[in-house]
Length: 232
Image 1: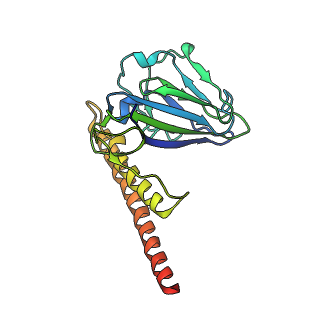
Image 2: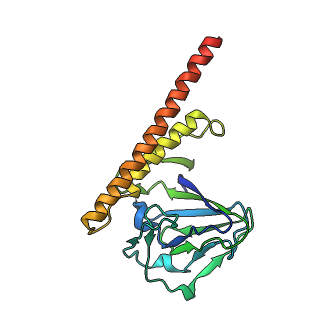
């Protein structure tokens, strides 16, 4: 198969952290079509029921993707606190993982996680893979080809970093995040004017912060170049 790596995120919950992830389906707000997308959730520390491991509703990826509520809860780790309100929690399964183990879940699967009530941190890395047939609905984004070939060109091609935290890699990461922000805060369906404004403000503020960081990185790059030239 032809596969792209679309994005990755660290989910960190410190000991006793009230942070949680509400019940949701990624397909509702990722704006990717068709839904040929999987998340590999890799445990970097023990992920247990006590520490707030991933919880899923088995088989829910076969159902429709109903509307979610944007709760904007400060403790919710999702960008807009998107929440699926009607969930049969009696059917939930806890995916407890040891460090190095991982789970896979589909973009339509209902999932979430509770706060960390343990005395140790819970750290996970989520990597999202898509078929090259998948296209973003909205602004064009970027992705890295990790297998096969991309004959569709729905995403701008990314390049592999040359070193950990390299300046070029950090600049490219910054631009990739900026491209995603527009779709992350996109309005879905009939939305009240106040919420539209709030999403617009969050989108604009996120872009402004990313642009400021990008400028700082470019200035650092320029000064480093001048310094090397002077030493030569």
